Image (cartoon, rainbow, N blue to C red; front, side, top):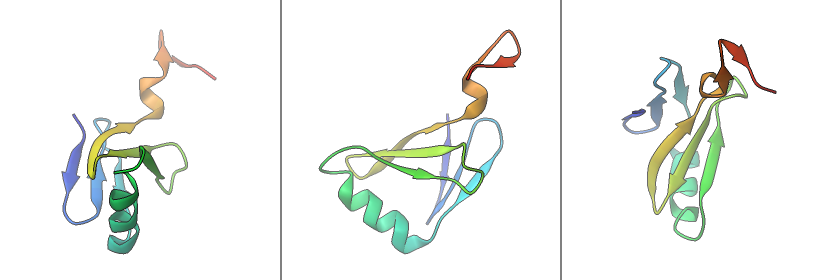
Length: 72
């Protein structure tokens, strides 16, 4: 389960730490009450997903693997 480190950092199950500005996270949280929102991390591969004002999951590139190889 991904972990939220207040106020604007998130740690993926793989150990990658996503960091954003507090203002950006606040805007995305507010917008997520209308529909799901995502913040893309600096690595361009991890996405922090928000719904109803809270972080619900992190999409990780390592989750898209099969038999040790990445799926494209």
